[in-house]
Image 1: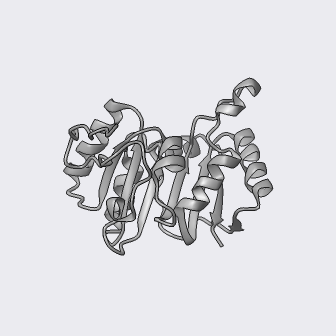
Image 2: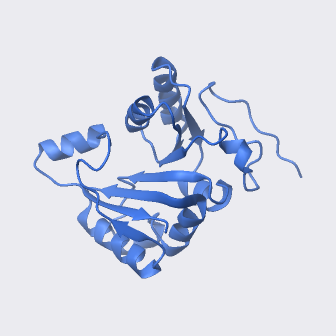
Image 3: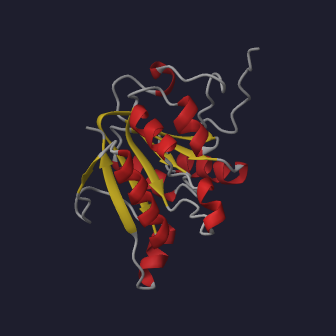
Length: 203
């Protein structure tokens, strides 16, 4: 059965031609331009600022909630960005079932739901199967950037990443490259709290 795509909510929305097969490279990438994916992009502030700073790159923000997607689409249009789009889907599904192999230069995962209760840890996005899908979607030398304010989730994620043996871990200093702060991060750091982050490279 062929499932036709629905109409987009905005010209800034990326609607896959099919939701039940892996995308072809040409369906998600514009020629040789690097593509970055922002998983769970929230209000889109990080996505819009990053896309504005890198007009030579393309960006897709992934967000499940319709209301947030509409807000992100408006921000993209208001900023006049032709290199940013919003995709309304679940992050796990996008990474594990839609992204073509070796199609993405960077995947960003910032402050995902930590699911703090032990019985809910299986719902956390960072699992071995997810990390395997991340590596498959990344180009050689591509990066998976993970950041969270939740210390226990960070330790959990690092254990999964190291146990997987899938990536090379490289330094990620404040001045390593341009990386805008989310509104949540600014508020969190203003309270004297720390963000925890890890930079993983597909070798």
